Amino acid sequence: MDMAPTTYYVALSGLLFAIGMIGVLTRRTAILIFLSVELMLNAANLALVAFARSWGDLAGQTAVFIVMTLAAAEVAIGLAIIVAIFRKRETTNVDDLATLKG
Amino acid sequence: MIAFMLLGALALVGAVITITARNAVHAALGLVGTLLSVAGLFASLSASFLAAIQVIVYAGAILVLFLFVIMLLNANQPITGRDPVPFVRELAGIGGVILAGALAIIAFSYRDPRPLAEGAGALRGGTAVAVGETLLTRFLLPFEAVSILLLVAIVGSVALVKRPVPQPDGLTDAEGVALPTESPERTAPEGGVRA
Image (cartoon, rainbow over all chains, first blue to last red; front, side):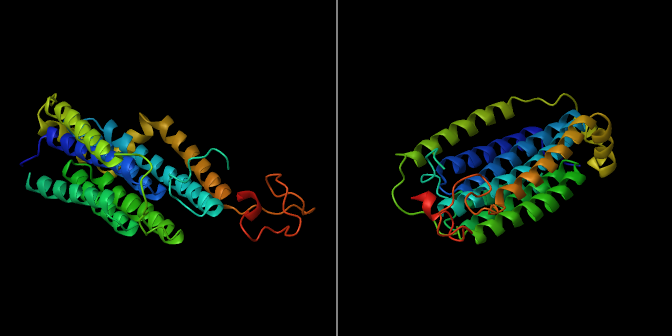
């Protein structure tokens, strides 16, 4: 069986992470920043699973399972916050949400 | 190897669509492509359970939630107008290239501690049985902590989107803020507070 080496997976994960970071920095809508954060989480998950195979240890895969649960909780709370902000301000543009005053 | 190249290319294309698409729905669909490709990569890394969970939870539940919110808030038009941060695209691009380069250096200096076939064999295919055994023995405490976190997230998200109920006296709302005297039932969303 022809298996791709771990380094390729980790390099792909790094690329996805960097793309996600560019998205977080350049996007101007809170929802799209959130989407980019999901991309970064997935890149980290990919690296964890690649290292799990490299070391033959299921701890990496278990960690990914927990990260996915955290991501689901984070999305639920984050989107609820975005909806709450939208109701109050009628915008999700993060440039308009720069004040601390509610 | 061919599967890795194909799925990796698809994941990168999806990621680029996610961060460049003008329409938020297109960005979310690009992310679906990336998530499904990453699920395929998980399967090729002998993590079959995680591949299934990735499709069900991420591409299924989480992305549907995203699409719901994008449509609910009607946020699929791009924001026009001048960006208040100067050169943010250029700087973010440079930073991303530097980060990707640094991570690539780390990735290509990594050496597997043992042959790949041996490591993949020790994972027992990453089935639900194998992952579940690890989760309920070595990682029992994080597993239980996550269940509490999920409960808090459910309560928190319900509490966040709940509309405040007017108090019986009609003078203050649920947060104790004085209401405009002429409309105690807060139909117009905080018209007085926002000004």
